[in-house]
Image (cartoon, rainbow, N blue to C red; front, top):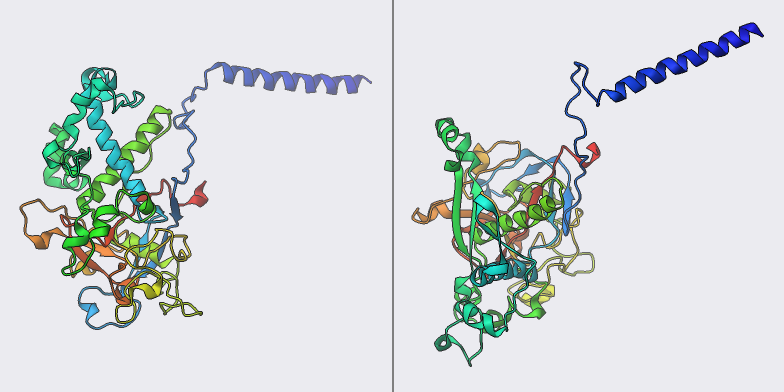
Length: 431
C-alpha cells in the first residue's frame, strides 16, 4: 500500500512539474527564448480561385509546331519549356465584363465633377472617390454639372442624350521592374524609386467602327451600331480593343480586387495581366502535349462531322461551323482544362512582343519577350503576338502552335483577350 501511495505521489509531482513548465512558457508571451522560430501569428493563407478563372497547374511541354512545317520553322522552332502555375479566364473577356470597366471610368469622372460627398479626404494622399455615394444622373442640381460628360447638342443624333465616349480616359500606372533590375539603373532607384513608376492615359471605349474599317466592300454596319452596348451581345467577347486597352483593363481589375481585399483586412493577390505567349499555348493545349488543336485531336471536326470551333471553314462557308461573326464566349466544348474557345471565335492578345527569332533567345523557364514600344517608335517595334485564330481565319490559325501578330495601337473586330494571374506558391498540392 505504501509503494502504491509513493507511485501516485510521483505521478502527481510530474503533473505539477510539467504544468508549471507550461505555465512559465505561456506567461512569457510566446517569446522565442533565443531560438529561431520565425515571426509568429502570421495570417494563414489559402489561394482562392478567382471568379471565372481556371487553375492551370505547373508543367513542361513542347512549345511550337506540333508537326513538320518547313516555312513555319523560319519563325518558330519546337522547344521544351516549363511554365509556373497560374489562373486563366475560362472565356475571353466579354462585352458585359469590359463594360464594367467602361462604366467605372464613366462614374469616376462623374464623382469628381460632383465633388462634395462624392469625394473623401485622404490626408497627404489627397482625395479619393466615395463609391458609397450614388450618382443621381437625373437630379436637376446635377444635370448641368454632368453635362460635360455628354455629347454636345450639335453632335447628337436624333437628339439622343449619350455619353461622349471620347472623354472616357483611364489614367493608370505600373512599376517597370525590368528597368529597375538593370544594373545601370539600380543606383537611380536607391535615390528615388518613383523613377520606375510609369504613367499612361488610355481611351477605354472599344473601337466599334472596327467592323467597318477592317473590311472593304462588306456590309457590317449593324455590328458597328449594336455589338458592344446592346444586351443581346453581353456574353460575346469584346473586340475593338487594342493591346494597351487590354493591358489597362488588367491593371484596373487588379486594383478593383486588391482594394476590396485590403478593405477586408486580407492579403492582396498577384496582378491580373495578359498571358505570355508560352502560357497561352500551354493553357490552350489543355495538358495534351504535341496536340495540334485545343481539343487534342488532329482534326477540326468531331466524329459526327461537326466543326469544333468558330472560324472560316471550307472555301468561306462562315455558317457551316455554327457561327458567322463572333459567337458567345462559352460556345463549343472547352478543352481539358475547361477553357472555352482557345481556337477560333476571336484571336487573343498576349503580353509578348513579336519577333521571328524569339524562340531562339528566350529562356526555357517561363519564356517571356516583352517590349512596350513608345508612340513614336517604328511600327515593327509595336508588333504584339496574337494567338488562337478568329472567326474570319482559316483553320491553320486555330492550331495551338501557330503564332501571328498585330500592332499594339491597332484595334480589330476579330481580336479580344483574356486575363491570367500567377499562382501564389509552387502548386495547389502545397496547401
